[in-house]
Length: 288
Image: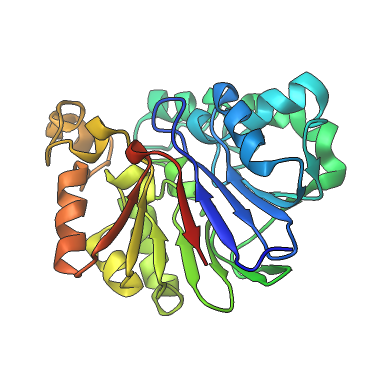
């Protein structure tokens, strides 16, 4: 038994991956994403053989879920004692072949990066998976988890990021909001539908802090603490980095309001946030 609920924000061992391990007072674990295959050894160290009550996957991008996919392929997650995997990914077979999207080529790249393979792996773990929807909730020991946002049909310009599960974890002392990689358009929907649910003590910065939800979302959250999954180069990137410099192309893809972390950091300064946990500094341990 633990005296505290502990959240480990695991430092990156692959480029801008995202991995969190929450250890409850009963010494059970909630994993969030986990990163790539090369991130699994460090994840296993922090799980430490504990029972994994929940493994929550925010969205189907390589830097978030290719690690668990590799574990499924290798030995059906035999290295983890997993009770349930929670996720809500876009429906691959329904979307594949769609042409009524802003950028067909990019849309198909997004679908095929890891989601196509995930669909083939699902039957192997069907008995421990649960597709969750916006409005559902679960309880794990002292942690209450509310799923506030899930995949919305029609948000196609930034398909995978805007399908991110957004959920809060409420303990007796703190509320933590996880935004996954939600982008500007998904952030608009989140704000319109659920801004009254967003106020939290701690927030995981959407999409590593760049090209993410708008200032109004963070103003609704009004966090005391921000968690950034960022290497040094990403945490200190300019307002418009080179990969976002072709504004005409972004507009043609309907991917607007895409800016670097410098902009988001300025927003946090305006909101008065004083505490920032950044993975560039190593693994962070946060008491909840």
